[in-house]
Length: 124
Image 1 (cartoon, rainbow, N blue to C red):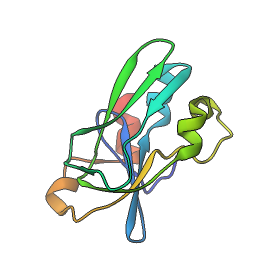
Image 2 (cartoon, rainbow, N blue to C red):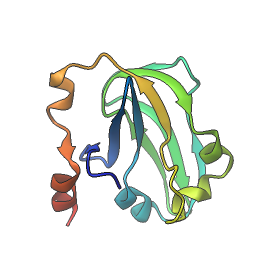
Image 3 (cartoon, helix red, strand yellow):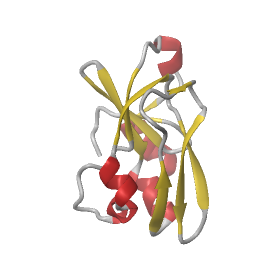
């Protein structure tokens, strides 16, 4: 995981990449879910508010909704993950992001996000 990512208490992350943000779920969330078998992601152009569910992920244990850490518009989805959701369980697989968004989120939206180091302390 990247030290510059920001995390939610519900185990999503956001990572700034120039004018876009990468959104995904943390390694901890992946471990807790177990073997991931299905993921449903939104279409590009979809808009979501902070804390709104944008995806569904299913594992052998349970189905879970994934929530937006900040508001934004989907500009890219990770087709590889949609087609092969089990890649999320592969520790050597690097492309674990789910969607990329553009966002006009202000500092208020970022205020309750945790630095990755604080997030790690929170889950220990």
